[in-house]
Image 1 (cartoon, one colour):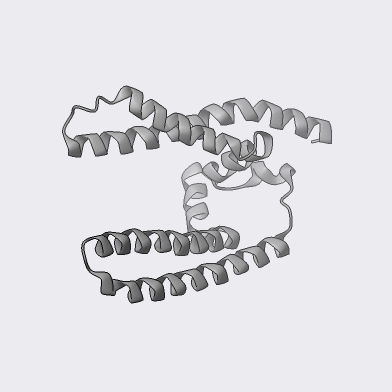
Image 2: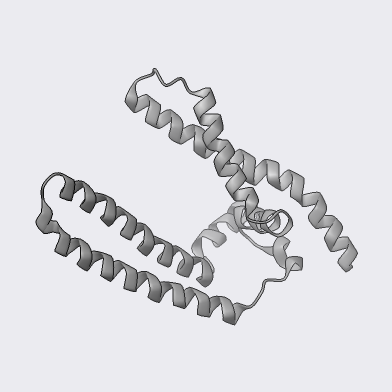
Length: 170
């Protein structure tokens, strides 16, 4: 199977645990968005929005908790993933993410985020046009995060992963 066909197959058939994780995270992000908009409206003087705010937060919270329970049930059914099968994953980004997360842990993701923001602040001059500044920050943070996490941390973690697989007998 060619790389393009593998990529299309990976995008067509996402695993159920990934879909459940996206679902519960979207509910909690919806709660954050509703909270921000409601606070802005309350500060502007639309105090009667409080009832809709409380109602929509309750709906989002219950939907998020239901989706989170579904995610937990799926993860219990699937069990812990075998590190020997990480390289068999058809999605290149998921494969790299699993290897980095297995070797380095979740701290690599946070280190990439923090370093990406610091790089963006150091590189981009704050005196440019506001629209260009937003666009430049967004692009710089996304590109540097991708380079750091999926290339640099993978480059560091992959030899350790291969060494661990040799020790296990693969």
